[in-house]
Structures are given as structure tokens and as C-alpha cells.
Amino acid sequence: MKAEFFKTLGHPIRIRVLELLSEREHAVSEMLTEIGIEPANLSQQLAILRRAGLVVARREGLSVTYELTSPQVAELLAVARAILTGVVAGQAEALEEPA
Image (cartoon, rainbow, N blue to C red):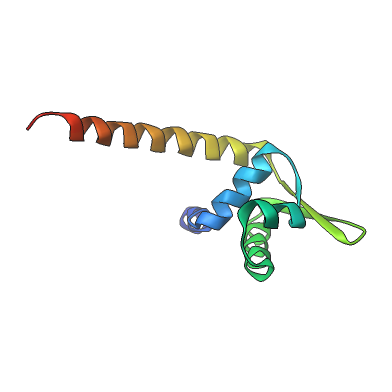
């Protein structure tokens, strides 16, 4: 189950969608503009995130708005970003060290 969860997070478009939704809820049209992908591709990625329970959709007239199911999703992304930043910084330091 954990592996499936992290597999869901293992796609750059899904990560970008979650980052956008970490800021605030977004309509699909806003996400299309921000991410710059085809509507069918965004729809597919949103469906995967919905099935994983990470986002929920709300229809407002002709528009569909998405939001995170929990603030913990945003926290997870922030922790992952901090870890990655530390790893990259460590690699940069290792490259700068004289042999």
C-alpha cells in the first residue's frame, strides 16, 4: 500500500498539481494554464490523484475545482522538497571538494 502511494507521487505532473493545490484550490482551467499540458493528460492525472484520495473535486456550474483532501499532503510535499534540497546541496559540496 505504501509503495502504491509513493508510486502515485512519482510523476512530475502529479507533483506539480499537488504543489499548485498546496497553495489553494484551483479550477481545472487554471491548472491547465499553469502547467501547460493537454486537457486529457491533466484529466488522467487528476483521476489518479482522486482515486488515491489525495484530491477532491467540486463542480461549480461548468467549472470543476480541485483541492487537497488534507493539509498533510502539502506538508509531505514540503518535507520531500526539504530532503531533496539537502541531498542536492550535499552532492554539490561533494563535487566541490578537492580529490
